[in-house]
Length: 317
Image (cartoon, rainbow, N blue to C red; front, top):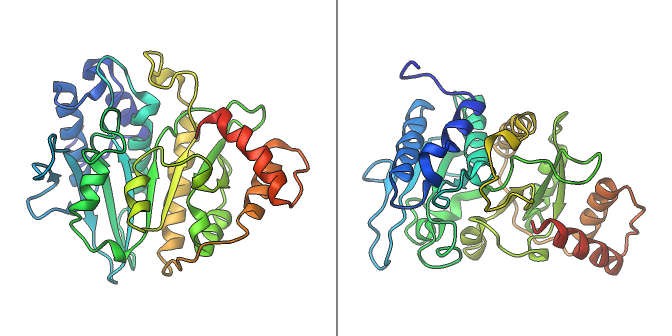
């Protein structure tokens, strides 16, 4: 492959989920191979190093284990920023195709589709380390370390878009193309943007993050008050199992999500995001439930809560 060529979504996902990487567990040879690959992709995509010392944020003081976060930036014309992120670590011996090779390949493809970047906002692409247990929701978590030692003013970030478990079909007949979106409840602008971007390949369904809680790297940004959108297809039967292999992924759905994200970024780039919690966000959830289930869910907060609690618990988004 030429040194400046960007691999396809399929090639990237197959490489990062190859059994030869032995799960990309922190500190392992496979983890280092994945990190070097992602660093090279940042360079090939035309990003500039985000950190003063280069592509890598590591060796942070005050932590028993330092994450090896990778991030690049494409400067825009304003002093605002949009951020894309996903974690790249997993467990020894597990392929980790859906978790999280799929999301990484989607972000690389979305960034390729946006090249060259000529936006108002800075475009930031982050690959976080140490997301999986035992680091999850601890001070060692890579995205937490990133936010605590942020290389930019987080108040300038209009939206952090985080992906996790985005490569599989949702087990609802006729709704296999579903992608759940959490976090839009904090801004009418985010609701409008998610709703307005169209796709022939995927369908988005918005729910409040508090219905499930922080299940990935968006946790660090939510705690700091940064507007965020979390994209996921929820957990499935192969979650954290040896059966989470490349062959089980829906590659067309992944390509569709990459294209959707590229369009969404361009839409959000046209203005700033007004952070204003939506008191009646349950109405948005009711619309999502009607589309997802096909049932006439009424516009009533108690009815929405009853339906949604059982549905989201099923998928453990």
